Image (cartoon, rainbow, N blue to C red; front, side):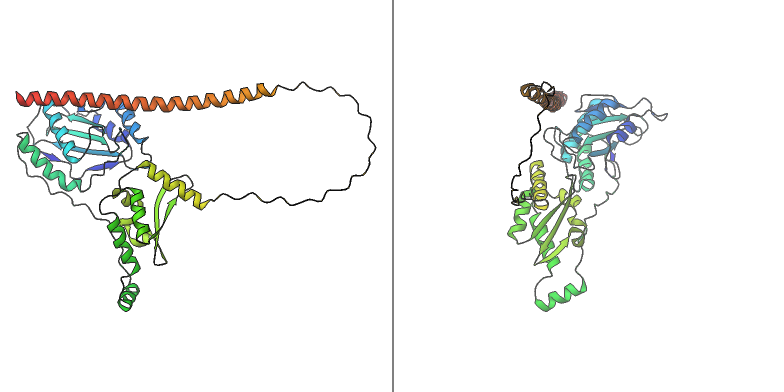
Length: 364
């Protein structure tokens, strides 16, 4: 059994779902969803469910995960066998039961399945990182071939992931380091960052470690609230992440941090407050009071006065309008949460039933 030469990640579920389910002349039968943990079976239903996970993590640029498993030409498996293999494969790759996924069977020469999954856990928004997955999946496939009594195939060599680069110190920095006997500020800062990220801490722990090492930091937050990364300062020298290397860009830092949406929200709020502090109201300037001059008062002419609308009625309308908008927003949020909880509950029930079926199959 072989997998794709390289696992794929993407931004949009629509394209990959439609591709996997599109009929073709080379298929013996139309592609069909045979397993996974999703409730729908059509392309539109699957796309809608997948897109629901994107709402939990709008900061994730590539939530789509796509892979395939292919048998040697002429070999076939039943749907149940494929499901058991795919379930074991996803578990060994590091996905949880509540990471949405579907298995699509292509029943042509070289029978294979497409596995489409969301990297965002629907139960809590945790992101599947999948470090070195192109490397470890070769070992996993070999183990599955033995466990499920499949033909052992020679797997194509995996493509080793490129490690993000660190920028080297310049010649001037090196000469200064040799003259002072101290490591260059850039190199020392890179070492502090690497050490602070070694055990995949959460965002606030990472920041605390930087402060303990006397490293200054600034979160670069756009006016829209989007987090774009950090800039740092060490020994009174400021460094952009780009000056330290691609390893310290926000895209790569996220892969080395445990995600907590509340932490990122706190960072955004704190940064916006620092960048835009509250401006105190100006002190009123005393104005000299003019001496009143007697003016002849004209005799007032009676004018019809419109009957004022009672204040209570205006207030009642305003409060009513505001409360209706709030209730609608609250209801929409509650419906989305209820829908997510319903999906999670059904997924867990489905997984339990499949596990029981798998145990019975093994016992038989």
